[in-house]
Length: 215
Ligand SMILES: [Zn+2]
Image (cartoon, rainbow, N blue to C red; front, top):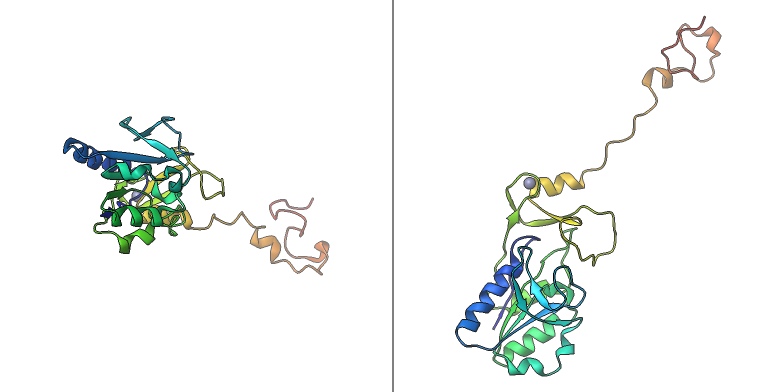
């Protein structure tokens, strides 16, 4: 069984992943939480949420690093699944081996393009939940992730300083081009360039701003 909540940033996806994992743990199921190795924002060895909830986790850069260890568990929960290049093969193999596989991750990057291979899990999953966050700008439900850093690398592990949840209007407003810089005043550009300033009936020359009158 594969389930993949695929929400926006700060939507509580890791919180939801750990909540669901704990329910299985309470039912005496053996649970393994796997987190992405480069994600050490809050803890080196635990999967952690923004509000400080942690769960003992195994770190990995690729899920194949787990070897066959996952077979000892009933439930395998993968945090930040968009970062694992082999998340599809792993989830499918584990699910077909009878395991309950929970994967949380971002469905899209800050450009709203598919993030990693997370969307490939959708047709392979029994259940998908898209969570929403709270828009950092207006407070509406936020389904998108807005980058507020100029770093162009796709895989920037970051928190509030790098990413903000955004609703559609606030996200689209981010994409609007910056206002063009102020152009040369129209009055000056309208002057014929071949005309000598002394012959001009205008009280200005092309080299001036148009505000100063000659003596
Ligand atoms: Zn908004």
